[in-house]
Image (cartoon, rainbow, N blue to C red; front, side):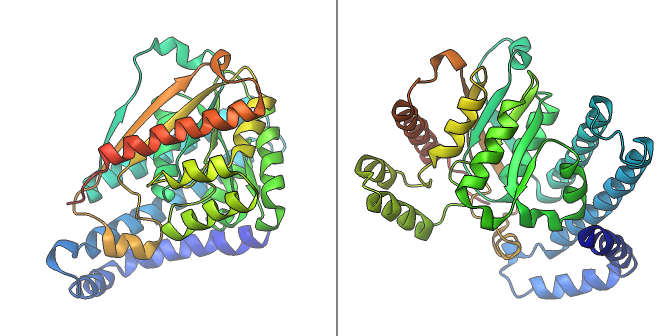
Length: 333
C-alpha cells in the first residue's frame, strides 16, 4: 500500500513536471552532454526516451485502474478473461517502448531462429533459459515472447523491481513472482517450481540461470565458489567461458522437474551487454544500437533424465552461447 499510495502519484507528478519543464531540461542535458566527446553527445535522445517512458507509465497505470474497476474492484482479476486483458496491456506497453527505442536509439534487432512449423510454437509450454546482460535483454525477451510468439511470460524477479509502479501493479496481477533478497536461492527455486507446475500450452517461464549481470569480478567469485564446493569440473568449464557467468542449475532443474512436458528454449544475445545502470546508458550508449540474438529449442523428450546429466547438459548449452557471443559480438558505433 505504501508503494501504491506514494510511487503511483509520484510518477504522474514527474510526468507532468517533465512535460512542462521540457525546454529547460533540453538545455540542461545538452550542456551536460557537451562534456562528452562528440560521438557520445546524445543527452537529448536520452531525455526524449525518459519522457516517453514516463508518459507510457502513466497510460499503463490509468489502464490498470480501469481494469481494476471492470474486474469488480479487483474481485475478478484472477479470471482468465481479465488476465488476458493484462497481457494485452503489457504487449501494448512493450511494443510502444520498442518503437520509441527504435526511433530514438536507432535500434535494430536481428534474431536467428530455427526453421520450424509455426503451429508447433503453441503445442506445449516452454522454459526459456537466457543469458543475463542488463535490463535491456529482459525487456526485449519478454517483448518478443508476447509479440512474435504469442506466449504469456512468467518471470521470477527481484522484489526491488516493484519500485517501478506500472511493473508493480501489472506483474502482481499475473502469475509471476517478486522474491525478496532475504529469501535466498531456496526461495527463488520454490517460486520457479510453483510457476512452472501450473503452466499451460501457451505459457513460457523465463529464467536467467546466471543470477545476475556478467562482470569479471562476479565471474571470478562464481568460479571460486564452485571450487570451494568441490565442483572442479564445473569450475574448469566456467573458467573457459569468456562472456558468461556459470549457470546455477537449481532453478532450471526445478522448472523441468515441475513441468516435465515443457520444451526448453535457450537464448543467446549480444548488443546491450555493458548497459546495466543509468550511468552506463549515459556514458556508453552507442549512436546506433544493434542487437543480435539466437534461440534454439530442445524438445522435452531430449532433455537428460538425471540431475547430473542435466547439469552437464546445461553447461554444454552455456558453452554454445559463449562461443556464439564470441563470433557475433556487436561493435558499437
